[in-house]
Length: 294
Figure 1 (cartoon, helix red, strand yellow):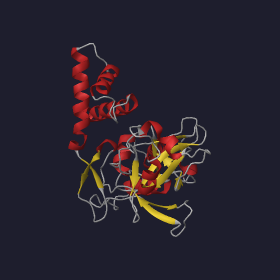
Figure 2 (figure 1 turned 45 degrees about the vertical axis):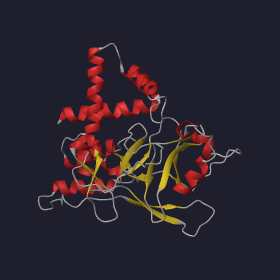
Figure 3 (figure 1 turned 180 degrees about the vertical axis):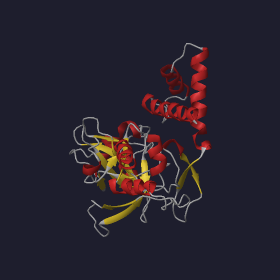
Figure 4 (figure 1 turned 135 degrees about the horizontal axis):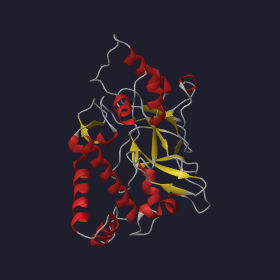
């Protein structure tokens, strides 16, 4: 996404946080960076996410938990679901048996305890589990809403404009205790259309939250999950980053060899593949960098 100036940006449905940063700076005349934009936006305006495009069109597909379990039952005993996801969810005729398909989702959404490193949204009919799908590569990919390599956070230009006008006003002061939960209506693509539209929601966030603070649960309004910006939420990532630094500092090991050791030590258990550990280490190092800034 490219910034097109404050006159044309208002015609966009969504803009990335990078563009929102430039837009807000243009509207207020203040210097801005994306970290500051995050703290201003999170908990004050609705947030959404879209698959990060890397030259291949992709979108989100969703399934109720019962459908996920039904499809996973096709796997052979002991077969890793993360490695065989596409084969389990795509029929022999090449059709993807999805129940929901969306180009964007509310942000952030939760990471479920289903044995899969993917994300979910609550509904009154049960959680919907989401994956990214590319029609060209025919790959169904689990993702975390905290994986900046997988998703791009977006906002509505009108909401950014409202924040900027509030910043420009000497009378309009923000309510910093309220918080916000992004919601969205999605269409059911299953054969049964008893409820053609279903409401999904993100996680309740209080103002002042930043991206790397979205790890620790706290009290929230009844029926909602809240993630707030607290230091202890990143403690596990900081511990991992600290141990990586210590090991690489006193030996000839690098991050790749540490990942190999973990994989072999635990017999290739789920979650210890090189790709999973690379993502984990990247999050840990990012959290450490953020902590050093503060």
